[in-house]
Image (cartoon, rainbow, N blue to C red; front, side, top):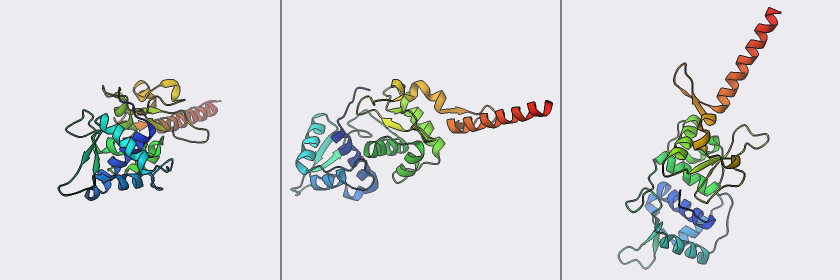
Length: 222
């Protein structure tokens, strides 16, 4: 993946995508609305305090990269901005609604677990369950124009690993540089009995149950 964005650029694009999906009647965004979206205290991590000058400078850089365009309506003196990052006639990046909602959440909140992504991205797209999110992350990593995501080392005391987007460059400590494309067999697999995709946690639980049953049988034989 050749595209690499700065943290302010990621925040601006994330906000434009979010508002395009959640409040289409208010999209494209004026500079004031975009600044408020960047500094929003909910659904953001970290919470920022960007002024209009810094947001404008970021927008100008994105316009030069053909990732944002200015749109002024007839008779309007206020410039408004829309994203050209993906799913437009101008760009090559194409994502499904589920992929777009997930990537947008990673842009706005940083690394998250599949469970967190399923809960938080549901305001922008329909996500059935965590297994669907895990399968989608694998798909995003296997695309020829990717990888777009990376699995981070599991934090102590947490059951799930977090995932990060790669549009901001390499992520420090990300599984020794291992992307989902190279480790998808560790993230999800298919149960040969019924062909249903199961998560890593489900596989571990199943193996633990099998070991416990074998130990019980050994004790009975003794």
